[in-house]
Length: 238
Image 1 (cartoon, helix red, strand yellow):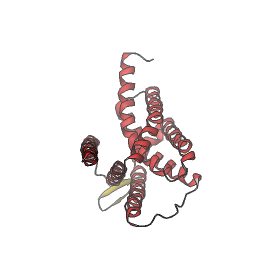
Image 2 (image 1 turned 120 degrees about the horizontal axis):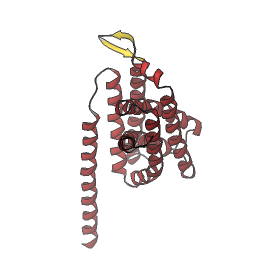
Image 3 (image 1 turned 30 degrees about the horizontal axis):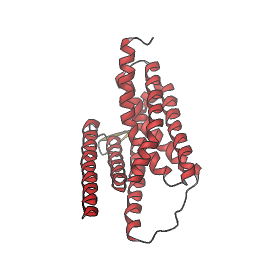
C-alpha cells in the first residue's frame, strides 16, 4: 500500500501541508499569547490537535467537500458558493484579529501599559476552531489536487500536524523574543486574510508568489536584526 510512489506523494504533500499550516500556527500563537504563560503550551497543543481533527473530519466527508463549490447565487457577475462564503468570512475575521493585534502592539509603546483583559479559554478555542476550519478547506483542496488516495492524504496530514506540534513552540518563542518579527508575522496574517477574501470573490493568486514574498521579507528582517545587533555591540565597545 505504501510503495515508492506512495512515499514520494506522502512526503511531498506533507511538506506542502506544513507550509500551508504556518499561517495556522501564526494565528494560534497570536491567540495563545493572550493567556497566562502557564496555560499557553496546553492551549497551543489543543489548537493544533483541533486543526488535525478538522482536517481529518473534512477528509472523511470528501464527497460533500467537493460539493461546496456548487454555486449558490450570483452577485455582480461573481459566483458565490458555500466554500467562497466561508473563505470570505474567515478572511475578514483574520484581517480584523490581525489588525487589532497590530494596533495593540504599536499603541502599547506610546501609552501606559494597561492591565491585559485575558479572554476565556473556551472563547479562544472557539476562534481557533473557526480559523482551523477555514484553513482546513485550503489544506484539503490542496491534498485532493495532489493525490487521489484518501489514505495517503490522511497520512500526510497527520505527519504535517505532528511536525507543526513540534515546531510551533519554537516559532512562538522566537516571535515573542523579537517584536519586529511579531509585527512581520501579523503582517503575514493580514496578507493571508486578503488572499482568503480574494479567493472567496473568485480572484485566486498563486500562493508560491506569496510565500516567496514572505521568505524575502524574513531574509530582509533577519539582516536588519543582524545589523541592529552589530550596531549595539559597536556602541557598547565605544
